[in-house]
Image 1 (cartoon, rainbow, N blue to C red):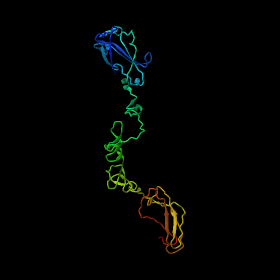
Image 2 (cartoon, rainbow, N blue to C red):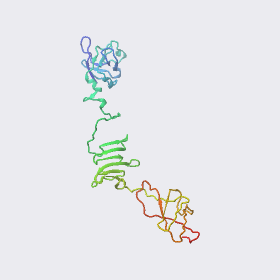
Image 3 (cartoon, rainbow, N blue to C red):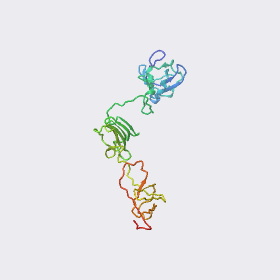
Image 4 (tube, rainbow, N blue to C red):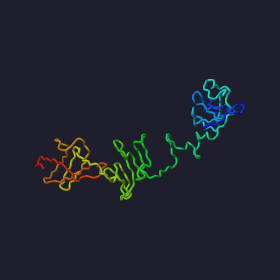
Length: 323
């Protein structure tokens, strides 16, 4: 903060040209009060004040910085003090003895000093302004109106990886680092919207809403419907009934036997041992037909299956030939 003054003796004659020792202070009252800032300008430390024709100009805060927070007080008073006597260009200790006291009265600071810590900017309070190094909370409606592939980005501290970006050129939102996808830095999700006639460029992890078919499309190696990609997982189910003593009775025609099956792990066919079996008795010498219905639970992710069924049978007879 610049300060200018004129230094004269008791007769009104300008003091001799040279460099002078001075002290400057700022208080919050015309007399007494609290000392808020002080600075000593000394010839011995090459910080003295140069006087020419009785006039001097100096920058307050060059030696002791002016704290901006002192300018929140609307009433500040400036004080100047010179040694006794005030001698030009003297660097000895005797020339820096302050015994007479400061000049009176103190001068009230004008409005220009308060620009160091203005309470408002164009009428807006400082608390309502965003800062780069502060935690900001936005309560109003913000709009980004620019056409750019990097219109809005959320990056890591070093700016090396993009975590989230709004691409207003392609009208899409990207989660992950599409520009430099290496190692763990991959594109996780791309969200877009388009019609079937204007399919967006594909990127692994991409997704867009097809406004023609009203379906979401997902990209792995090509665009496919998200809800039917490959159907359910392929699975083979081995049905090994485990109901000891189950019996089917034949009556000669349209016989239908029903049994339920549960899931048993660790068993498979053709392993050289017998599984549980079902036994029935028929008193008829002619061939009999048996319709076996097996009920089993369908997995929740079932999508499609193969239409072939294999049944292994074993039969024996104590009175007739083995069939």
